[in-house]
Length: 615
Image 1 (cartoon, rainbow, N blue to C red):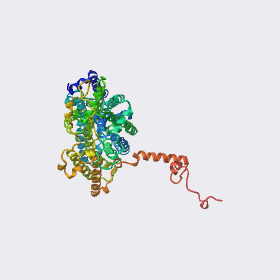
Image 2: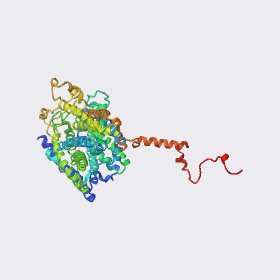
Image 3: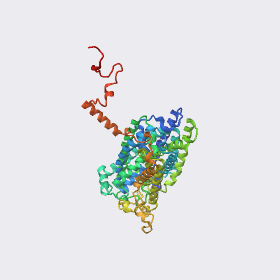
Image 4: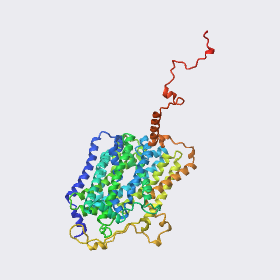
């Protein structure tokens, strides 16, 4: 019996029902909002939910938007191969929410922009806005291709469903409810899909805990296998994952997502007040940390189950991203419906991300590339937005083909956000924090940042870092029992199918250029900080040499002290102290505390010596 027939036979009708139900419910939300909002025919209602959303659904949607199948499939595989150090992403999430809430949110919310790139024209000029829009569109389509491809690969492996059938079904369902229901449909399907993702993780984790005899056994196995490598404070920037690369590099990557990415900004500025927007960011932090914890522990479960018999080394899966689906069929195959639930979880992650991307792409195209150059009515713009959702959906499905060539899914996704998102983050930071930055500096900075980050990113793809820098942890097949009886055990021919190691250099050491072992070997987590720092540095220098000192940007376009929570906190403390001490300052606060002079009375002091009254 071949492995394919084993796997395909394990996916029963109950699994298909669970999976189909998730797709149907997602599509139903789109139909519901298309019907309830049929009379609200403006592009603002379609793209921004009419700015009437509240904190809780927006926070869940923010969490789901970039917690895609990459999180469900690749984070556990990352822990399995490289250890649990990615748990430090939790610190970068906390720093990201603080920076977004205090720096970017107040400016975007005050300006009430539909597209974040409108800000670039208000602050700099139209050329800067168009460049920012173009970079965002390229970045989002590339990333969305990866997100569609990842679960399709998993579904293909688990069920034997045709790979491109799976890709197209994801794209079609997403495009349908985005086109029908707009942002409201996207937000509420995100809420539902986040629940499915958590349920899928919990099904795998609970079954593993039962099989392995408890949580402590799983932790103990991970510790003995070197997977709890949390305390790695090596400052070498060439090391793939350390405390510093993940917390510093991760913060830059996530700020470029939460602070300026259209898909996220569009959500929190659709809240009905800035307080709701801030609360949604911090509630979303709880969601991010929960999903991160689930994915890291799922990776530890994966290692505990396969510590003595690694399916990847045995050639039974062609990529580490297929390990989680393999585990699911191995331990949940006897429970009809649960494998379907896990595949639905992977798909839910993708649907939420792809729908967010499609909606964001439609928003920036309408606001930045159509509205300024046409005289369309609001109804025409709303129809155009729906048409664009359709076009971008098709484009993202096509882009999934390119994703199959990009290697490890998690690294590819973070690299895309680093290479393009880093310089864009630098551009927005220049505008918001540097009042003397001008349009010449902004354009020069973002182009320089993009050139440098593309240089290092493409170099790293051609000349991958050597294993002594990536440090994959050891895996073994010594405990394998290669039989074809029962369920997912493997035959001896599997050992001959050695996987292509993703850490093996693409070139022999002799043919590698000098830059390959330092510059190109830089941790992919640092692509974003490099792009951001270069963009800001070049932007400031060029601005100062081209008349930036004389420029005074409009205060509403930059961060003001009144925007920050710290300012209001200090004022509140001062007011309380003043009330407690009961001081009265008559010199400065006379008018405020004692009222105005009554014009009925004369406040001129009488001089009795000059009085004409007879004594």
